[in-house]
Length: 298
Image (cartoon, rainbow, N blue to C red; front, top):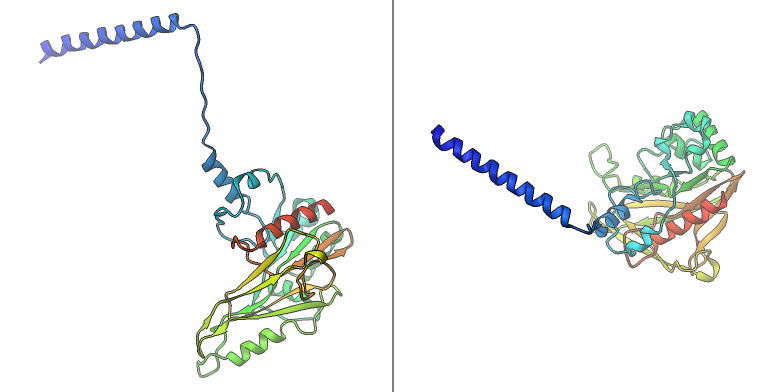
């Protein structure tokens, strides 16, 4: 075996040396070496398009752009901000570092979690999210000092949330709780306008999700390229609201859809939870333009 192995190894060494010698000779003869670099732009652009929504107010879950706008639109967005849902804010740190967060936003509350403890709606929402009185005071001071509170909130319920003692769905109680949840309250002294949305009843137990569309009055609205907005009503009932302050977007019926309330050096922006994925409506563009507008107010 050894007598065949040794000649074979010697042959490999000779071939290897020859190869290296030829390679060295070629390099010495080469007058010019060109270095070519390539980039794969499409996957990177797609990934960036998704990542910019990670802290976008009210947008939750993985968001697929799906061609709503071109990649160039998203690549040109160099908007840097920090946003947190109210239930994830460290208010004690915020008190020491008020500039650490640009936006705090409040989402809708399930009717079983909603606690109506006062005539101040923000206090009710904070109580529902287990925000203490001291933390609420920090929140007020943060807004007064220049923070922006983004509110797309209200109450909602499915048809299976509340049952009577016999185990039957208490539809009448659900209706009463949702309809009364926003009655007789104000938001930091400002009145509110509530919008009650209902799914279509299929039978005493089931319901069918539906939609509500709004045509924007461009002549009375700040953002002229926002034309149509939509709300997907996936719950049995939902009661959303806007604070009655300066109107930024109004529909053709004169109803305020987006409002802005100044509070000290900061602002409270309130709007209905418009659909942002549908390419035939302007919910996503509205949020971008609203973000730019609010950021420039600071």
